[in-house]
Length: 320
Length: 320
Image (cartoon, helix red, strand yellow):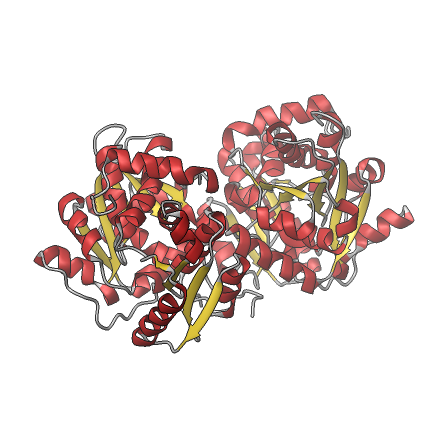
């Protein structure tokens, strides 16, 4: 079942399944940013979502479909980011254990947040090899089900519900819908939701990526999955490689991938903080940064942006 | 007319007058903060208001009542804070000139914001004497009407509309309504709005003040207006002395004044940033800080807090 690319029915079911446990996040507009960009911007504020990011959607949709036997053994993942909190919340909701492998270098505030949801943290060296090896040991010991942050159609269907809500609630016909792209779970889900629940003409869906981790851009333009070997960007949520499953959906349903560099990302983040008075993390600022680089393309259009998350370390901000 | 303490009709008229030019700001709740405080918190987000603070309310209500002749000569004030922007916006709305005396030490971002609204900035030395002398010169030269930031019943009636909206929109019966107190415009207006538009039992209105600028606390408890001589607090919007007109209203309609120190204020500010993902300025964090100091008093109650503003210098944050 979960090897089918999510269709209308699957996304609708995902939404019914997870809706009781999540916030219906609001849509904000901003006059100043409209003037600055020359288009009409609509922001779906998933930074106000539980765990401070959209990630709880995919985690919940996956965990709530596990069998009682699987739930007894728990769920596991390795993550230093929002997926860790999303899965911890999902497991708590389903009354299952969660084992989260985190690099010892992860900020203590992130560890505390995961622990607050009742998850067990297993620390390891801060390398991908150590993370995967440690996760393997955890699974061998506990029999826990590994929940991948994006290369899973249940996760993709969960992330799709953000765009579904956006299109149901927004007070305009969106010409474009922009999201960041890291592993591709949100971008692929957004493209599917736009296809199946447009509520009008289908908006063009565009992924936005940091120049320092441009594997989606390369993959999209060469038609071949190019892994991200040496990411170098402030957008810590987007350093990962696009997954195979999201990529197939992206190739079919996404219009384009646009880039922004770290200076543009920090400038866009600052604009949102100063003008909208809301906190977004660097990864979340990439769509506005890319839009500002390609203003002419969006002139006069209605553009939706999913603000993906607001988890930042306030003691380590990039503003000067 | 504007020497009458604002009553039901005056506040209602103020609201009709300014409503078309302002946002109806949303009310936020937060599960984590409810757990932490042991009460049910409702936050009216005036940090999302135009100019990033409630101050535009009082400025607009005053400027929109000026005569055509007065409007021709313009309006003036001295301010390095949100009143400067509020008055600049009000003047722009009424197509009048605004002359804003600002200390040369004011952050350039604040000057830029005032200039963006089309106001003229007159710089002076950063002392109260220099500010008042410079304002005097400006008035002599231009004939502009001085709009005081709080010691004016029209301003108080304008600030009262924030609480009026709050009480109209909130999905609960508030037991308490908390605001910061600096000059007392918002606190006195909130007390009047609660008296005239409670929408149920009248909520107790409490002013919250930094320990380093506790003139309202002293004045309230001695019954005599005590000026603030040497304020020392991070809450830059609350360093001023309570005005005579607000104080008369506060004495009659306000239940109590509570204090918080700067460490508590920064901790409360950080809680709101991290947990609610919204940006508030230090002055705006004082009610939550005071509530945390006096948890037992509010246990199990419905408490409304007006989040007054979100104008901070991102390059100068108090987080470590």
